[in-house]
Image (cartoon, rainbow, N blue to C red; front, side, top):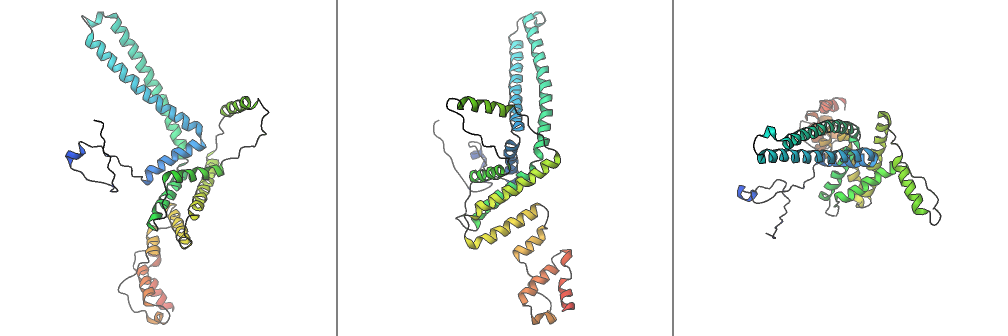
Length: 313
C-alpha cells in the first residue's frame, strides 16, 4: 500500500486500455493559452487590485463553508429522522431541530445570493485587465517555442512569472522613501505604517484611466520580457525573435491577416507559372513564381498582381 509508481510522457493525449485507466490516475499538466491567460489574469488583479483578489478569495472560502454546512445539516436531519422513536410529530426536540435547520439554510441561501452578486461584480472589474493577461500569455508561448530554434532556449513558467511581475512593478507608482526610524521606535512605527496602509481606501479608476493603465502595463511587460529574452539570444537569432514577436502581436491584435503572414513567413510559390514576358529581363524565375503565388493565393488585394506588373513593365 505504500508503493507508488509515477510515469511521465511527452504525449499530449496518451491512450491506455480501459483496465489500466481504471487502476491509475491520469493528470494532464499541459498549459494551454486560454488556461494560462486565466491564471495570469488572477495574478494581474492581485497585483493591481489586491482588495478585489482578497475579497474574491474570501467569497470562495465562504461558499465552500456554506456547502459544508449544508451537507452537515442534511446529514443531521437524516440522522434525526432515522433515529426518531414513536410519533415524530410529538418529538419537540426533533421539530425544534428541524426549524433551526430551516432557519440556517434560509440564512445561507441569502448570504450565497449576496456573495454571487459580489463575485459577479468582481469578475466584471477583473475582465478589464484581460488584455494584459492575453498579451502576457502570448509572450510566454513565444518563449516556450524558442526551444525549436535552439535547445539552449529553455524557459520555465516560474521564470516568466518573475519577469511578468517585474514588468508590472515598473508601472506601479513608486513608494516614497522615508528616513530610517530612531532606535527603539522602528518596530512600532513600521506596524503603524502597515496599519495605515491597510486602512487607506482603494482609488477607483475610471474606465478611461483603467484602459490607459492597461496599455502601459502591456507595453512594460512586453518590453521587459523581450529584454529578458534578448540577453540570452545568439546574435544571429535576435532579428528572427524580434520579427516573430512583432508578427504574433500584430496577429493577436488583429493588425495583420493570418493568410498574409503565412505567405510572408513560408514564402509560398507556385510550381508552374506563365511566361514572364519583359519581366524576365530583370526578375528571376523563382521570384516570379512567388509573385504568381500571391496573385492566385486567394487574397483580394494581390489579385491580378502578375498581369499588372507585366502590363506596366
